[in-house]
Figure (cartoon, rainbow, N blue to C red):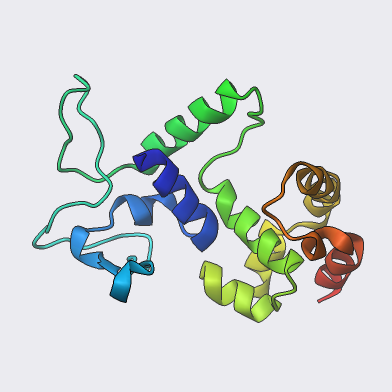
Length: 173
């Protein structure tokens, strides 16, 4: 269950696995009437924990009998993701960090502006946006996105209806 929640959160936030793995319990709050949760993740590549309050996502001890009070490392998230994708015979080198690009691409396909995408994924420059959404990578993504659409009832049809047009606009912005 931890892995599912963890991987879904980084996929939707486009954040780094290390940030989420270091989230403390007081950084996660329930919204009124349990309508959702609010995550206040660390900003920056390093964290300063002077008085740890307990980690929200914690790893199992090597004995598999105990949950440790330690951060869930991005390397552990990487191993878990690879395990699941390999089990499905779909692994092509994806990592939790790949979700940053995936999140940005999904937002672009939904028609979100480049400025809002950069803000959501915490990129400051257009160069970072273009790096993660490189034209040569996007061309391959058109085919996979259409395949995803045909196999998924969750993603609305309008997202992929004019994908070439949306991606063409993205590449010229």
